[in-house]
Every structure is written in C-alpha cells, then in structure tokens.
Image (cartoon, rainbow, N blue to C red):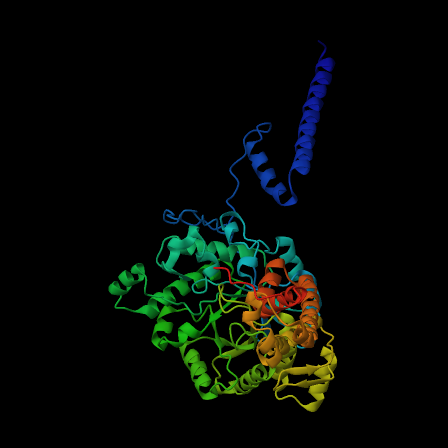
Length: 577
C-alpha cells in the first residue's frame, strides 16, 4: 500500500475512534438526564466516571467531607426496632435574634388540630396583633414515616400540609418553632405496644427510660424527622417538663445506687445527650426547654452538666397573681448557672381547668400583665438576656385528658393578651381598637363576656359555644328539676311506667318540646361550623363531652313526652322485672 494511502487510513481510524467516544459520552449523559433526579446527577456521574472502562479505570473519588459517620448503636431489643439513620450534619449559621423580643403563640395540636384553611385565616390576625412566631406542638399530628409511622393519628397532616403551613407562617412573618418532647409527656409514643419497654415505669406512659440503649436512637429519629421538615426553623423546643416518675424504674434505681442517688445528674445527663445531638447535627438552631425540672436542681449540678451554652430555659408560670419576687429568684439562679438567655411562658388559654369550655379572659390578661412587669425589670439581670415569651394555649393537659377551650373560643383572650404583653394595662382606646378588630361592640374582661356577633376566624363557634356554656346545662336542669308541674305530673316514675295526665302535660308541652327543638337547632348549627374547622374525631369528642352529656337527657324527656301523650291517659303500665 502506498504511504499516502496508509496515512489516509490512519486518519480515518482516528476519526472513527473519536466518533465512538463522542457517541458513548452523549448516550451516557442522556441516560443520566432521563433516569436521575437533579440531586442524584452529580453522585451518579462520579460513580459512572469511576466505573467507566472505555477510558481506563479512574482513581477513587474523594470522600464527601460533609457526611458524618456514626458508630452503630447497641442491638435494639424492641419489638419494632428503630434504626438511627441519622441525617447529615446540617450546614448553616444561626440567625441573630439578639435584637428581637419574640412573641410565640403556642399551637397545641395534640387535641383539636385545625384544618389548614382555618390557619390560613388565623395567621394574618396573629401577625397583625404583634405575634412574630409560632410554637407548634405536633405530637401525633406530624406525618411520621418508616418505623415511626405508628405514631401518626389517622388525621395527621401530610408533608404537603406541613410545607403549606410553613409557607403560610412565612408570608405572615411568623417564625415557626417545633416543640418536640424528648423526656416527659411522651404518651403519644409510649402508649404503643412497640415502645412500652421504654417507659420509665411500665405502668405509666408519661416518661421515657433514659437508660435503655434504644431510647436515644428513638428520640433522635423523632427529632430528625420533624426538623428535616423544618429546614428554615431557627429554634427547636425539646420539652423536658414534668418528667413524672423519674427515678422510680428499676433501671433508674440501679443507676442511682451507683451514682450517690443524684437524680438531678440523671435528668441532666439525658438532656445533655439530646442537646449535644442537636448541636452537632443542627448547629444553626437555638435550643430551649421548659424549666420546671431545673428549678429543683442546684446551680452546681446545672453548671457541672455544661448545658448552659447550648440550651435556654423557658420559665413558665400561668397564674394570674404569681409572685414576682420568687420569679426573679429563678431568673437570678439561671443567670448564675451561666445561661446566656432566658425565655418566659404565659398562657392565653388551657390553664384554668382540664375540662374548661369557656376562656376566662381576665385571668389570662392578668397573667400577661404580671409577665410584662418582669420583662420591664430585666435590666436587673445584666448577664442573662430575655429572648421572648411563649404564649401557651394548651388544648389538652396531656395526651389522655379531655379537650379544654377550643382555639376560636380563646381568640379574644389571645388578642387581649398580645396587647397586654406589648403595652401593659389596656386603655379605653386599646379596648375600643380590640373590639373593632374582633367585631364586638363591648367586652367585659372580668366576666369574659363580649357583646356582638364577632368578626374573627371562628366567631360563629365562639358565639354558639358561649350559649352552650352559659345556658344549656342550666336550661336542662330547670326543666328536669326546676318546674313543679313537671316534677308533679311528669316525673321519672311517670316516664318509667308510661302514664300521665294529658290535661297537665299540655300545660308544659312548649317548655319541654320547644326547648328541645331550640337546642337541637343550635347544636346542629354548631356541628356544621365545627366540621369546617376540625377533623371528625375532634367534632365527635367535643360534642360528646360538652353537648350530649346534657342534651341527651332532654332528648329522652322529649321522646317520652310525645310517646306518653299519644297513649291518651291509659293506665299505668306494669313494671317489667
């Protein structure tokens, strides 16, 4: 072959090799784009380059320095193992809130959790009245997944619901703070058979056993699932209040025997482990906790635990006439412990009785006015900064208790309390403004009575519950016990033996039947309104506890009245044995 032809063939061969390489590259790139999500493209590209033998084997890629490797936990002995599966350590710098006094409104979702459309109406009002954050206690309303899916209520929010809720809060300039119980008040977890073995005392579901090897993996898993759905949150509340029965379990007794009976050290050891996890995995989040367990501990114990750098206490007192001097002693103690900041907690509802139906506005206003005095005197404590106040609105006293005041019923109290915590005692001008905002003509704060229909989210419920609270039980008792003619001619004995005198019965016909019809109409209307805001389980529970308890006896009386009247004074029926 001529030299010139050889050169030509050589060039053609080179071109073919280049063309094959380009085709292979395009094919791989297209496959990645079609089969990979955007966040996986980079990872898959690295792996494919590593395994690509067309160009020869590449060197090993560098390890991802952002990922933390965690040692395996001890073997899990629970019926339903909870793997750690810890998230990557989060990057980010904590926001600076040093120049802001936070006012967080507590949404207690472990009972009567509202549907999203109601929150969409509520958040603008909260922002308008001066709230700048929400403390959201999800409990079983959170969309837990994987091993934790068992914790979910049948009516739990979806992830999309949470994302929308966070969006609604953001556009109304409300900082969202998740409250995640990590020690006491873990009934929603420990009630399940799968986690019964982690109870501090087997009989009680309140508190978790801090000594079991499975405890911290479970707590971390709960924290991670909630916080990973709140990537923009600057704060996290770890609860840790009312750790009932701590030290009474056998594991704790053994630990105490080996540690000089130091219950405080045991409590702080668990808290420290939780706080360290959050500091390492979520360094951009400020952590705080309820303070009641800390009140019992010495300054030295708290200092020795070295938690003050990473967590702030939330000093909570809900009484309307609490002792300010005693409160300042607590603040002084926490300052001495080295906590750089402190939060306070008041109550706008849910602190006047576990079955309270109607919010006592005056009581809650006075509680906030008391806290306002404490806040205004914080210059006495130069080494501890006041960060903000949590305005609690408890919906249940614990996971097992009945519902207390519904949120729409407590909104007038919340509006008054927001004004009081910012500006102190209400002037006539501020009362007029509050009435205009709420759609009332007049408000009696001490009697907790508001005149007018109301023009705030859930005002219809407020009005109907007010009628039930003030009149239903009274009206039923009046008919059952207060009318002498009813007692004389339509007693329980008459109804039992199915006889009565129509001449007398017609005298109190309207009193019995019309009263029954009026209350049925009102409660039917209330049910419709409740169903627009709440899920079916809440509606049934509230109606059963607050309406049916009284109205059922009137329903039975009206039914008996109609049936006996139709008998036209027949002889007394013989009692059936």
